[in-house]
Length: 118
Image (cartoon, rainbow, N blue to C red; front, side, top):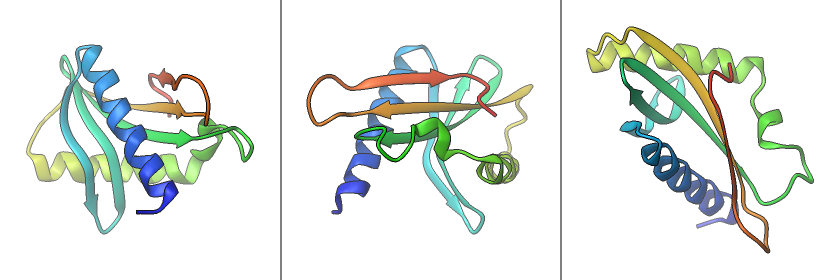
């Protein structure tokens, strides 16, 4: 497994545990269709949360927040609509969150959860 794939998988596991500890229920992980992939789909009360996880080992090439542009945000909205269609759920609200995971080579992992990021 390549370094970037392993780092991304690590970040998604950490993000899933972090969000579950906040009381969210993980409904799906790495859901895919021909449009792309959703990292995490969760439920928080009556709200469906579509979560993008960005993991970095440093900010040398930009922060995790900078990795999600308007094109990526539009794709996530289309993916969410497809996921909802296929799941049969009818959430009252849909929210798009970002979890930024910074895992430096030394020191503790930093997790930042941005609710309603896009």
